[in-house]
Each structure stands twice: as C-alpha cells, then as structure tokens.
Length: 227
Ligand SMILES: *Cc1c(COP(=O)(O)O)cnc(C)c1O
Image (tube, rainbow, N blue to C red; front, side, top):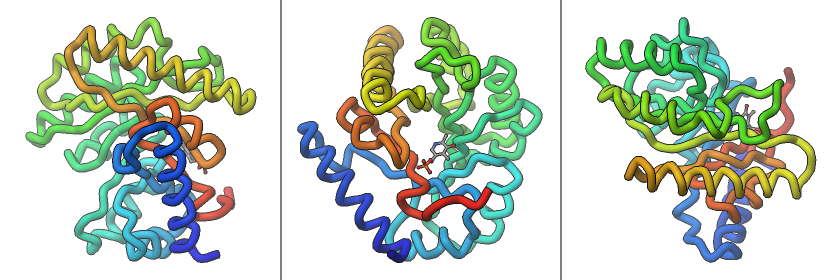
C-alpha cells in the first residue's frame, strides 16, 4: 500500500472509532509520526492532505523542517523527550512541544520563547503508569507543573500527553481513562481547556474511545521504522 492509501485507511479507522464513541471525527487530530522516515515520505503524506507531523529527535526535526520549508501548511510537533539544553532548537513558536516533563525544561523553553517573542504550544507529559522506564511527571505532580507552565506568558498550555504501559489493550485503555479523569480534574481546577495527546498505531482506537484529541500514529502510516 502507498502512504496515501495507508493514510486513508487510518483516517477511516479514526472516523469509525470516533462515531462508535459518540464523538465527531473532527475532534481527533492526527499527527503523522515521521521519525526515521525520509522527507520524501512526509511529502507524500502532505500531498495526501496530512498537515501535522511528529518527530522525536531535535536534530532530525530541524533537518526535516529545513528540507520541507516549501510546504506552507505543515505543522510540526516535537513528541520526544525534551532535554533543557535543546530547548532553543524547538522554540520557534510554531512547533508544538508534547513532551514537557521537567521544571528546567519548562523554564528554559519559556525563556527561549520570550527571547524570540513567540508563544509555544505545549503539553505536559504524564507518566500515567508510573513506570520507571518512562518519561513524564507522576499524575499527582501534574497540577504543580501546570501551575508553573500557566505562569509563563510565552507558553500556551494545550493539554496532557502520555504513552501508556505496554501491558496489553485492557491496561492501555484503563490508562487512557485515568488520563481523561486527570485531565477533567485539572481542567476544572485551573479553568482551562486541556486536550489529550494519546494513542499510537497499536492503540489509537482505545485512546479515541477515552477522549484523545490528538493521536500520534507512525507505523500504520509510514510502515516499519529502520532503526
Ligand atoms: C514513535 C512514537 C509514536 C508513533 O508510534 P507508532 O507505534 O509507530 O504509531 C507515537 N508517540 C511517540 C511519543 C513516539 O515516540
């Protein structure tokens, strides 16, 4: 199958999952995760109507942004772990940052954005399964982080992001549900609208059922990655 055909199949699955959950398909934004795939693959997806792309590595993101600068409507999402010393590279005011999970990262990103007089859309990464191997803040710490983020005018808080435990579909769905509950609690507490970035190739339907507003899908669109 071509990238355009795979993309179409993924879009159909998104629409079906949304309808099953009683949601509008348009409430779910698809981020095509293009890490380790060449710019030509991104171009093919763009030509098929895809606009949002996700990358995990700062250098690779920058190379692709340069190679694809002629695509006027492309929107980049940095979905990897952001090291504070790399904050400058993603602080262009256009790239969304999904993986914020440290106070130093928040502070550095806010400072770089302020220097450039831009506002960066950010999401706080939550380690919903409390796994030692995963990035993200513990659920009980999330409120404190949101307070810090909201204090910086150069950061525009858009929601919460997570990667669930890989224990199986039931566990993933339960983790997505806990994310939704956490989001609802925090949204009420701070009086802000918060989205949910969750769901990948193997579990995005469950994520949509639990309220995902962005899903991050790589393999189902671009095929296996050659690491
Ligand atoms: C690689 C990656 C994805 C995409 O995963 P697939 O299983 O290929 O869909 C989504 N989110 C994050 C954070 C990733 O690192």
